[in-house]
Length: 130
Image (cartoon, rainbow, N blue to C red; front, side, top):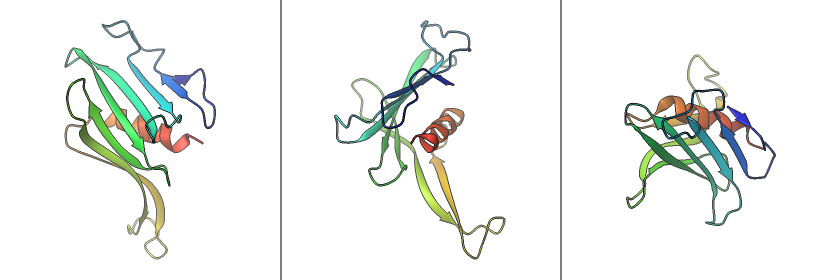
Protein backbone atom coordinates (compact mmCIF):
# COMPACT_ATOMS: atom_id res chain seq x y z
CA UNK A 1 0.00 0.00 0.00
CA UNK A 2 1.29 3.42 -0.93
CA UNK A 3 0.10 6.91 -0.13
CA UNK A 4 0.76 10.15 -1.94
CA UNK A 5 -0.72 12.30 0.84
CA UNK A 6 -0.01 10.58 4.17
CA UNK A 7 -0.37 13.51 6.59
CA UNK A 8 -1.58 13.60 10.18
CA UNK A 9 -5.09 14.96 10.70
CA UNK A 10 -5.79 15.28 6.99
CA UNK A 11 -7.56 13.44 4.23
CA UNK A 12 -5.36 10.47 3.40
CA UNK A 13 -5.55 7.94 0.60
CA UNK A 14 -3.75 4.60 0.24
CA UNK A 15 -3.76 2.42 -2.85
CA UNK A 16 -2.24 -0.79 -4.11
CA UNK A 17 -0.32 0.64 -7.04
CA UNK A 18 2.03 -2.25 -7.82
CA UNK A 19 -0.69 -4.84 -8.30
CA UNK A 20 -2.20 -5.69 -11.68
CA UNK A 21 -5.12 -3.40 -12.48
CA UNK A 22 -8.59 -4.73 -11.75
CA UNK A 23 -10.99 -5.48 -14.60
CA UNK A 24 -12.64 -2.08 -14.07
CA UNK A 25 -9.21 -0.40 -14.59
CA UNK A 26 -9.16 1.02 -11.06
CA UNK A 27 -6.71 0.18 -8.28
CA UNK A 28 -7.06 -3.36 -6.98
CA UNK A 29 -7.74 -1.96 -3.50
CA UNK A 30 -8.03 1.55 -2.11
CA UNK A 31 -8.41 3.03 1.40
CA UNK A 32 -9.42 6.65 2.10
CA UNK A 33 -9.53 8.50 5.43
CA UNK A 34 -11.69 11.62 5.75
CA UNK A 35 -11.66 13.60 8.98
CA UNK A 36 -13.72 16.51 7.65
CA UNK A 37 -16.57 15.31 9.88
CA UNK A 38 -19.10 16.30 7.24
CA UNK A 39 -21.31 13.57 8.62
CA UNK A 40 -20.24 14.07 12.23
CA UNK A 41 -17.75 11.17 12.26
CA UNK A 42 -14.21 10.37 11.25
CA UNK A 43 -14.69 8.02 8.34
CA UNK A 44 -12.56 5.51 6.47
CA UNK A 45 -13.88 4.20 3.16
CA UNK A 46 -12.27 1.30 1.37
CA UNK A 47 -13.00 -0.90 -1.59
CA UNK A 48 -11.43 -3.72 -3.52
CA UNK A 49 -12.10 -5.62 -6.70
CA UNK A 50 -13.20 -9.20 -6.05
CA UNK A 51 -12.25 -11.52 -8.89
CA UNK A 52 -14.58 -14.18 -7.46
CA UNK A 53 -17.59 -11.84 -7.45
CA UNK A 54 -16.54 -10.01 -10.61
CA UNK A 55 -17.36 -6.71 -8.95
CA UNK A 56 -15.99 -4.00 -6.68
CA UNK A 57 -16.99 -4.33 -3.01
CA UNK A 58 -17.28 -1.23 -0.79
CA UNK A 59 -16.91 -0.77 2.97
CA UNK A 60 -16.89 2.06 5.51
CA UNK A 61 -15.35 2.30 8.95
CA UNK A 62 -16.99 4.75 11.35
CA UNK A 63 -14.31 5.70 13.85
CA UNK A 64 -15.23 6.48 17.45
CA UNK A 65 -14.64 10.04 18.60
CA UNK A 66 -12.86 9.02 21.82
CA UNK A 67 -10.47 6.32 20.56
CA UNK A 68 -9.25 4.56 17.41
CA UNK A 69 -11.97 1.90 17.55
CA UNK A 70 -15.22 1.81 15.63
CA UNK A 71 -17.53 -0.30 13.47
CA UNK A 72 -17.01 -1.62 9.95
CA UNK A 73 -19.89 -1.90 7.48
CA UNK A 74 -20.29 -3.28 3.97
CA UNK A 75 -22.13 -0.69 1.87
CA UNK A 76 -24.00 -0.86 -1.43
CA UNK A 77 -26.12 1.67 -3.28
CA UNK A 78 -29.79 1.46 -2.36
CA UNK A 79 -29.23 -1.07 0.45
CA UNK A 80 -28.82 -0.68 4.20
CA UNK A 81 -25.28 -0.90 5.58
CA UNK A 82 -24.36 -4.41 6.76
CA UNK A 83 -22.27 -4.79 9.95
CA UNK A 84 -19.07 -6.70 9.18
CA UNK A 85 -16.81 -6.14 12.18
CA UNK A 86 -15.28 -3.76 14.66
CA UNK A 87 -11.95 -2.44 15.87
CA UNK A 88 -11.50 -1.74 19.56
CA UNK A 89 -8.96 -1.22 22.30
CA UNK A 90 -8.97 -3.94 24.94
CA UNK A 91 -7.11 -4.92 28.08
CA UNK A 92 -6.36 -8.64 27.66
CA UNK A 93 -5.42 -11.06 30.44
CA UNK A 94 -4.40 -14.04 28.30
CA UNK A 95 -1.82 -16.36 29.91
CA UNK A 96 0.65 -15.90 27.06
CA UNK A 97 0.57 -12.13 27.62
CA UNK A 98 0.72 -10.55 31.09
CA UNK A 99 -2.14 -12.21 33.00
CA UNK A 100 -1.58 -10.12 36.15
CA UNK A 101 -1.45 -6.53 34.85
CA UNK A 102 -3.16 -7.19 31.55
CA UNK A 103 -1.90 -6.09 28.15
CA UNK A 104 -3.37 -3.28 26.07
CA UNK A 105 -4.33 -4.48 22.59
CA UNK A 106 -6.02 -3.13 19.46
CA UNK A 107 -8.36 -5.88 18.29
CA UNK A 108 -10.27 -6.75 15.12
CA UNK A 109 -13.48 -8.77 15.50
CA UNK A 110 -15.41 -9.75 12.37
CA UNK A 111 -18.21 -11.97 11.10
CA UNK A 112 -17.64 -15.22 9.21
CA UNK A 113 -17.03 -14.62 5.53
CA UNK A 114 -15.62 -11.13 6.02
CA UNK A 115 -12.59 -10.26 3.83
CA UNK A 116 -10.05 -10.78 6.62
CA UNK A 117 -6.88 -9.63 4.76
CA UNK A 118 -8.60 -6.35 3.79
CA UNK A 119 -9.82 -5.80 7.36
CA UNK A 120 -6.35 -6.50 8.78
CA UNK A 121 -4.96 -3.89 6.36
CA UNK A 122 -7.56 -1.43 7.68
CA UNK A 123 -6.56 -2.31 11.26
CA UNK A 124 -2.94 -1.42 10.49
CA UNK A 125 -3.80 1.83 8.72
CA UNK A 126 -6.15 2.97 11.51
CA UNK A 127 -3.58 2.05 14.17
CA UNK A 128 -0.85 4.04 12.41
CA UNK A 129 -3.02 7.10 11.69
CA UNK A 130 -1.98 10.06 13.86
